[in-house]
Amino acid sequence: MSLFDKFQPLIDIRAELEALGVMPFGAVTEKLLSATEGIVNGHRVILAGTNNYLGLTFEPECIAAARQALEEQGTGTTGSRMANGTFADHLRLEQELAAFFDRRHAIVFSTGYAATMGMSSTLAGPGDVIVMDADSHASLYDGVRLSGADIIRFRHNDPDDLAKRLRRLGERTENCLIITEGMFSMLGDQAPLAEIAAVKREYGGMLLVDEAHSLGMLGEHGRGVAERDGVEKDVDFVVGTFSKSLGAIGGYCVSNHPQLEAVRFATRSYIFTASPSPSVIASTRAALRILQRRPELRERLWDNARRLYDGLKALGFQLSPEPSPVVAVTIEDRHQAIAWWNELLQHGAYVNLVMPPASPGDYALLRCSVSAAHTPDQIDHILAAFERLPG
Amino acid sequence: MPDYDDYLARIYEVLKPFTKQGLLLNEDSELVTELGLTSLQVMELIEQIEDYFDICVPLNILPDIRTVRDLAEQLEKLDA
Image 1: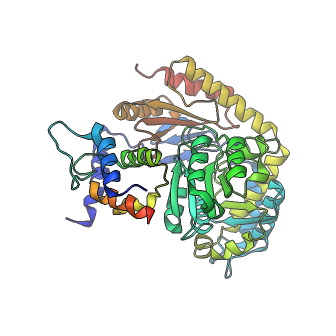
Image 2 (image 1 turned 90 degrees about the vertical axis):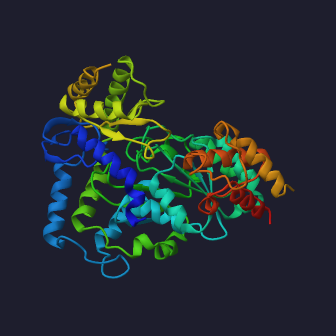
């Protein structure tokens, strides 16, 4: 027996991939040519697995803002928000996020993981109950495990199952946190938030929604699924990330509850880590302005998403349930998934290979994410790479 | 209110599809190492038990469950 015994399955998979000459996990981006093209593992590819939904990573306004912050405020804050790490721009971003989401309070975190893990580990505690969607992100699972609350899962995107579980809890719903996501990261499917909000209104509890993959995509202002479904008032806490549509790194929580300002000082992933670097805050603020100023990015993103989804469907691939900027091809045989991922790379398309347990169910995924910065020709190039796969 | 034996009977029932031919289930049967259940299957099994007894079983009990007996005991404790 050794500490390393439990890693043997991972060691075996790694050896298997090495023998095949394929390294899908930790593929190296050697050079970026634009927001949508690069050299990955030695191949020039269209980037179709970067979550760069609005394509803002090379936006001149964001780069200029980051550069100015770098020169004026230095490379890092070297401290926690609770010590020396709160700069004026952290507060400005919090105010801007609160205004964007039309909420009274906002907290900025150093990563999306710190935001979702932090809030899900802190809001509910011992004696409380968390009822979460079964397909919630790993960061939410990590958080609820730390919380000390009783954890109950409801079937993925199933408001009736949620209602059943809340009914069984009886009066305990007074101390209950319901957790779900706006758009789910692996299949791009959306939560039925209107129905979930109705269940919450009937049974009680507070609702936290992770809109990491829906910020800038849905709703009149791009605030996500809750806005699109007209139920923002029922969502007590919105959490998310700057690392997808805003093209940086960091996370947030927004809420109308004034207690959020106290929760801030109880959240360990906020306290015991250095605050985001000034350049990151500056580019995030610029990206948030662009997201609001240029709604046409959202339209282009959805045009590209539908083009890829419809194209893959016409080619006969088994896809996620609905068109979305995340388009996942489902493959039952993981060896075939690995081989196809490698073929796609050689044919000039980089996508994500996702294997259980990261994928829902027992199957593997070739997960594509679309960007507003993709041209229709680039989407067609991705489709052509899929078309060349051996049947 | 169901007792230990009620839970045990139900666990045997929901475990039937996982029982290999010739293998007899008993209270010492180990869910993962002996019956070969994945963690996802353990959770699905618990969902079936939840629906049958109309109860909520928190995931928090999972680390304490290795055998059929462990599960029945944990379920009984939930009522306490």
